[in-house]
Image (cartoon, rainbow, N blue to C red; front, side):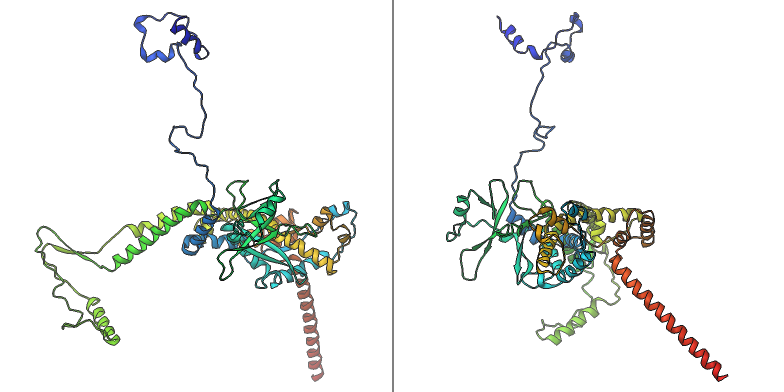
Length: 541
């Protein structure tokens, strides 16, 4: 077998059969060689995202550096005004002054567990007592802030990385302790407690300050503290669940993870940190150059016919006609400053020499700054999922566009609220309700008898936490829309009040009844007074 035949057999699976026709020699051309059917190899390969080889460059398997990213995010929040603009609105809209509870026990689920008689005043008692407790500093392990202030601090810390939320019982009351994720570390140098050996003995692993079992569940967290005078940090092991109840008592909260199997959270601003720094330097450079240019009111330009003469050589001197040495006395310095102002700000006319003209220093940088800055600012806002109109509080578009921006932001704010509620408000409310029922302050039939029944506990502690609604561009239109929805039966009176930021509907009804009663009594007393006056007038006549 010849070499030609071997090659032909090897490529047989990619060779198209030759056309059943004779190609004249005169028509044979290299240009149409690919269409003759002799050799058409089928190539294969792996697609890695590059349509043009080498266009995307090297592939990186990036691992987030949690501590460095957290420190960069905190630095940006402290020094960068753009971050303050974005994050400030983010925190205020999502959490604001706190979320209000609405107790909604699932009565249908409780009936399936043979619990039928739920007291009518259960909701009112729960909401009123929790409102008092959540607005007191008893919620705080440090006895410094109320629940809503703690929630805002936890959300802000989660925005910049992660925070360890710890529930502790103090003086018979549930409290919350927050620990910045910066202090949650693996105890490498704590030889005294031998945390690593103890975890390994029970087949657990400690990674990034978290002790995990073989299934990846969080068992405990290690909080580092550096006491004054010590060189090495000491660690406290915080169990994830209570020993007696098995209730979850500690967990990490953050808003963003790079990958689902990552242990820790990263800042929301991770992707824009570098651009933020560059935009800040651009702003500083623009403002600085404008300041320096403002110090030079004008310059003298000479053409080829100029004599080079200085037009300012005969102007009034700062010393008012006499040479003055640099002053050291404060009063003399003030007098000379006043003379400078008098000499330089008077209405002067300059006799310009031949070939010279005065020109003010001029730059386009300041004029183009706003459009450029806003273009970059929009991309930064989009990366953090907040509309630039909301961040800047500028609604210069028409009603529909502004309403669409606010509506989109309301959806995002509600998304992050729903993400945060199960991490702080809901579990803390469940622990508080459990404590109140144990103390006998709230009547909940069947709760204590089924305290280990997941369905009963969750059904009794079901609640909604409501934040402030977005402001209305046109309140009249919004009210009409809500009233129409209520009249058609799509929403309840309570939901309508929520949509319009009109407070609690039930409380409003109680107040209205009191006001109507007071109004009726005032009207009655007024009529009786009028009758008395009429009688007196009649008697006098």
